[in-house]
Image (tube, rainbow, N blue to C red):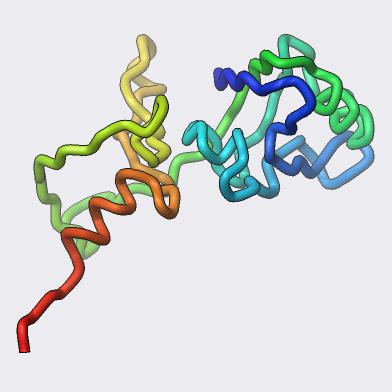
Length: 154
């Protein structure tokens, strides 16, 4: 579940594709850089939007979904389904595990990355935690750029 709270007259900053009259499930097709949805660090392009404020989208046409999102009000509760990137089956894949400690400072309510997976009461549904997106210019991105900038005195 993803909750977004927008100011009256503002937009969510996302584009939706799909609907019963289009190519399948309603999905996030774009996140406007700097928009509310992108800054929430809870959504990725490709996420399937199952419902909006409890209204199931599976039987709605594209135009009906867009109308619903435009007129939803200030508090928007999205039920989201997503796919995790494939994990490496074993160490022969060339992936080397490494643990590091980093210190990030939140901007608003976010560290600037989207994390997916985690434990579930049904262990069949538990998945490894995976960072699926780092928002450009956010705290995680700035940390990475700072630590990986080569500075040499000449």
